[in-house]
Image (cartoon, rainbow, N blue to C red; front, side):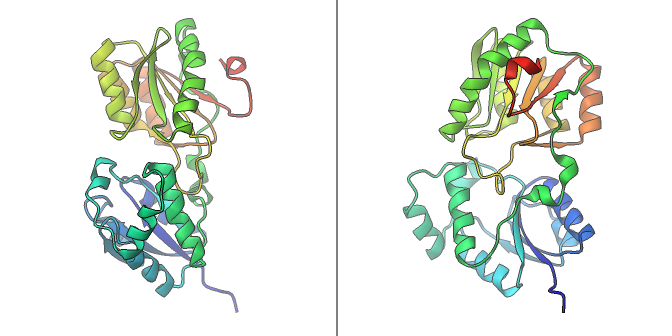
Length: 278
C-alpha cells in the first residue's frame, strides 16, 4: 500500500506559500498548513486541505498539529515580517528554544526551529522541490548590461555582502561609486533600497546574495517584480543577485519592467569568479 504524501507547509507572507501548495498538489501531495496571524495570506485556506492559525511563538502547537496530520515532509515558505517578530508570545517549547540561542537573527532562529522539527521526526525539505521554475537564472537578464561603473560596484560589493551575510545581518546592500550606501537589516530588502535612494538620489547598484552557512531549506533570498518596482521608486539602476541560490518571482514581468526603465539585471553563479561573469 502506497503511503499518502502529506506536505506540512509553514506559511509566511506573500505569494510563495500559495505557489508551493499548488506545486505540491501537482506532485500528488495533500497539503496542510500552519499559518500566522497578520502574516499569511487568507487564500491559504483555499490552497490547503487543513489550516492551523497560530501566533508567532506557538511552536509546541505547530509541532503537535503537524504530527497529528501525519505529514511526510515539512516546507518553510514565505517571509515573516521582521519587526513583527518582536511581538512574539512564545509557548514553553519556544521559550526553551530561545533561551538556548546565542542570536535571534534569521539563520539561528530558523535553523533551530528546523532542528526541533527534525527531532520530532518531521523532515524539513527545500521549497524548491515544489517550485523549481522559481529558481533564479544566471547571466544577463535584462537588455541593458551593467556599465563599467556598475561592474566595479558589483565587484566591490560582492565580498562585502558575503561578510555581512556570514554575520547573519542581511542579504542585500546598495552601492554607488564603490561606497556602501545602505545595508539591509531588520527592515528588509525593499526598505533598504528605498533608504539608499533617499541618500544618493539615483543610479546605484543593488546586490543580493545567499548568506554563507544559510540553510537553503528554510530561508531563500527572494526577488521579483516588487523588487524592480522598488528600484524604480528609488531610482536604482542595476541589480546583481546570486543565481541558483535564490527565488525570482514574476520573472517575465520583472524583466519587461526593468527594460522599460533601463535597469540592468544580472545573475551571478556562485561557483565562478564574479569578474568573469560581467
